[in-house]
Length: 148
Image (cartoon, rainbow, N blue to C red; front, top):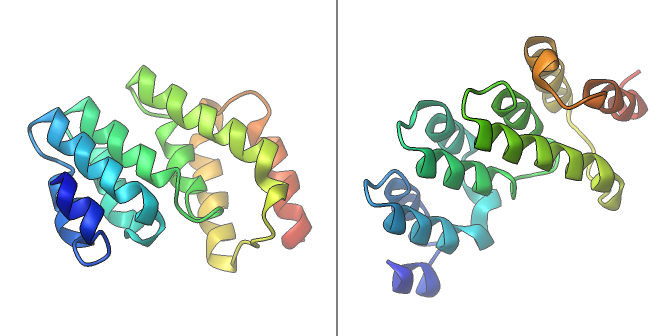
């Protein structure tokens, strides 16, 4: 597993993502570590499904960790939803990621697409009450720069 991840992550991306929900935490963790350098190339829908449907905490945590390395604006709706989850450790991981995102969002010049904007707006409407204090207001202020 480790060797596959070190030698050919790009060629084995699908296989490594398929190993993330392994019943052994160490196997899932090894897959996650191998995927980290290429996390932005993993379809977010695959990772989002693991966060939402996996029974095991470690699988959800590993998938969420990979989501943190996704494109700047595309990961926001998933993190907003994760803040409304039932697992306190995952909620904290997502909330911490959102706080970090807000502090550092100006460090990259990537702009949200109209689709990103709409997905974020929808997620804000659904999960605003579960978000860190004032995060929704701060995120809306960021979005106003791009979409008035």
